[in-house]
Length: 360
Image 1 (spheres, rainbow, N blue to C red):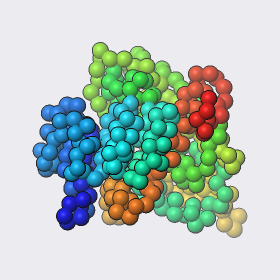
Image 2: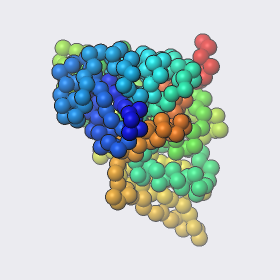
Image 3: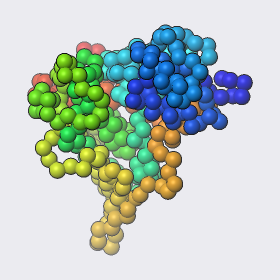
Image 4: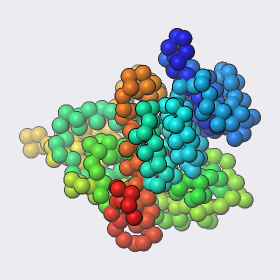
């Protein structure tokens, strides 16, 4: 740390998400300082450095990771690089904030899990939706027991026309690990499991479809298309996930689909004493009193500093206090394990039991 006890941060990746993190952490100048940034495109890294007043542009990932002037590293690069960079950073004694999904698949996620267990550093997965104001209020009610026993949930995110960066790493299986399921579906899976109380998933039945991308339909505004590239991922996925305690979770996500949708993520939690529904920026708590249905609206806090700000502060407090983050490495591994099972179920047409111990 610096002489004024600020946590020194390095950022790997100066693309869209790297700049989001640069923006958020630069606002927390009383707690941290961004000392370096790097990217395969050093011109892009220099632009980020100039925009946020970052003093040093590292020539490589290796230089940044090995720098004695950095305490924590933010990793915001394509999915295939998450595991090698996170493992290298942990081995170098750095704390890590790792973009979602934690890894490109469960094998790589298991490698991160083992590296984290062998380290005394903080590794946190950047699932910002857990820090959204409405989700936090619903979680508080769940923990107070207002919903009783949670036995089922349904979650999803339908984008009608939103395929990102057609032909880039987003739409290539060997670089991304999948389409909307691993891109936005992992957010909804993570949030649903969190609100359900982190039950242990044990089996999955799922299907994926590619009805738009191969025909270059359903293109969204995120990312710049590379029409010389390829598209070999899904554009819609659906799954039913069974938990060890008997509860179930239904998950449905798309980048492109012909249906009426407001493009907002949604979640419905069903409990024995009450339920919760959440879509966009508003939620509801639902129950029954005096033989009548009762519901209460849950809205964002006002003022609201935002989920990204809370996520960033949480990461810094975990480092200072030596505590486990809310989005632990185990939760990231769990998400990857479920995603792999959904893809496998779609390939085989069968139910897939989750392989927790790593033995084939």
